[in-house]
Length: 95
Image 1: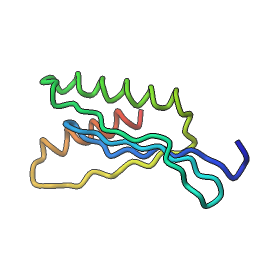
Image 2: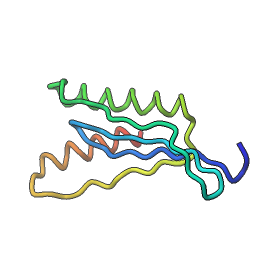
Image 3: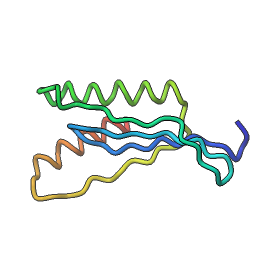
Image 4: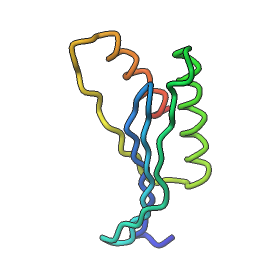
């Protein structure tokens, strides 16, 4: 890959649905490589959800070898417990 080329992985963290996308950028020209949603609502255990996030993100890194990561910052709402769970999902995705 030339010096002006890079692969960017973007993640929208969540504990029910987590979105991701991968772009190949050459100069100023982006090309979509992959995108998808990780559905986590079928798992009742929060820690199993976190493990699934970790496994899928690790798999994407192994497959696409991204150079950069863009991850959405969590929005602080009124429910502190939801915020903590979202923060955990974001942390696992970054790990």
